[in-house]
Structures are given as structure tokens and as C-alpha cells.
Figure 1 (cartoon, rainbow, N blue to C red):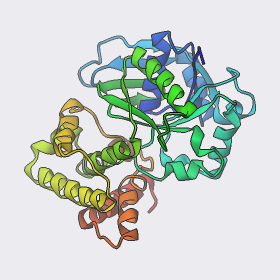
Figure 2 (cartoon, one colour):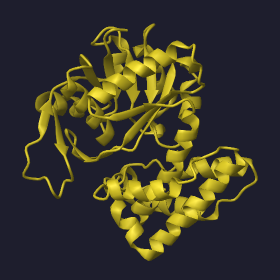
Figure 3 (cartoon, rainbow, N blue to C red):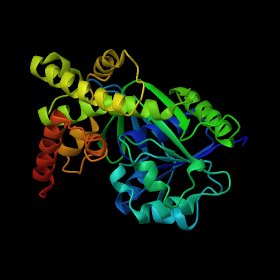
Figure 4 (cartoon, helix red, strand yellow):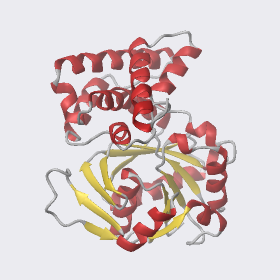
Length: 329
């Protein structure tokens, strides 16, 4: 696989960030973006992706980098792929998009050398993909990069982080390892600090713990990430959520980093000006990822006879806010 062709599925803040940076690097060769709405497709074709470096409030006067990757509707990409053989199909949509029709559309994009890369928050998406896609063709990615979308065509790189890649089941003899190395090379050249992981499930859970603290609380309190630790009462809630999630991980015999609490606080500092995706969704009247993040934790706890009281409370609060924002419950 001497060349890499990317399809970024989803044009939210993170999808636009990865598409723009890969296209700007010149090393990915070809990048396209798959979107759901025709008007979104037309806007991206007309204006391109506008990428800003920094926070919205601090960089309004700076000119963005503008790139024009190929754009297509998901249904079009599944019927006749615009780039021929795609190597990496990077899913940056929310887990709530993983309905049977969506999974079939992703399967239709795949060729013999295609790999599906899941960049979702939360847990449970691999099981949904496996209904149509072989487990051995699925890679998992987690990132702490910060991004915020200000329009259908405009995204802000609000904080630098790290991206980890791995196979669902690690096997050093599998072709998946070569694919991961190629993907990591492309991401590094695009400016993303990238690592390969032999135990990506553990890293997925570590990010789940961090997201289960930051995302719901920023959404409920309507604050940016950096404000959470600065408010004494919210810092106490952060610790309660963290301790419950860590107890859940221990019950599953997952050995998470002992310094994960410090890592959580560091994420808040590094992405201080960022509005979490859950907060952005509520403010825009969109469904959130509460089911995949907090809901996933609560459901796993229920299977083991455990109760995550604080998580259950924030779950209900976000669902109530979500119902109010979208006009449903």
C-alpha cells in the first residue's frame, strides 16, 4: 500500500479537522469527505473547508487555511466511489448514526484493501459495525485533539492532543499492523501526534472515563472545558464521576493508568477554550452522544449489578436538556 486514499465520513468539527489537515499535508494523496445533507455537500464544494488554528474568540481576525477535498453524499460514495480503491474510511460521525442503512453504506465503500477506522466516543460501535463488516477490517482510533465547528464549512483547531490507533484484537502477524503504521505515518505528516497501541481497548476506556466526566458536565453547566476544574462544586462532581467510572473499569479487570485523574485535568487545561461536542450539540439543538458515553457506562454497570449513581443523575439531566433543546424527550 504505497499510497493512501482517505474517505472521512462525517463533516462535524473533528471530521473537517482531519480532512483539512490530511489534505494540507500533501502526503495523503487523495482525501474526500462524505456528508449526509445535499446542501452541506454544495456548501463544501463552493467554499471548501476553512481551518482555523486556535479558539474562535481569539482568532476571528486571522485568515483560515482553505482546502477543497472531494465531497460526496454517503449514498453516492457507496454506489460509485469517487476515488476508486479507498484505503482508510475514517468514521467521525456520532455512534447514533450507526443504523443498519449507514453500516451497509460503509460496507459498500470497501474494497480488498479498505480499513474502517472508528473515531467514536463511547463504547458499542464495533458491535454495530460487525453486523456487516468483518472485525479484522476494523481499526479503532481515539484522539484528544480539540476542535470546534462554527459553520458547515468552518472548523477551529482549539487544542493539540494525541491520537492512538489499534486493532480490535491485537495480532502482530495480521495485515492490520501494516495498515496502522501507514495510517499513523499519514496522520503524523498531517500534524497529528500519533501512537500505535497493542491494547487499544484500554485506551478507549481511558478516553471514555475522561469524556464521561467532561462532556456531560460542560453540557449541563454550559461552560467550556477549562472552566470545569475552576468551579469548586463542579470539581467535586468531576471527582465523583471519575471515581465511579474507575470502579467500573476495575470491575471489568481493566488496568487503567494510575495518573488518569491528572490526565483528565490536563485535557481540561489543553482544551480550555473548547466547547465540548456535547455542549455544542445541545446549543445547536442536535442529539448528543450521551447514550454512547454515559449510557454505555451505565448499561455496562447494570450488567454487573453495579449502580453508578452520579452517572445516572447526569445522564438524566443531559437527556432532559436534550429533549428541551430538540423539542423531544
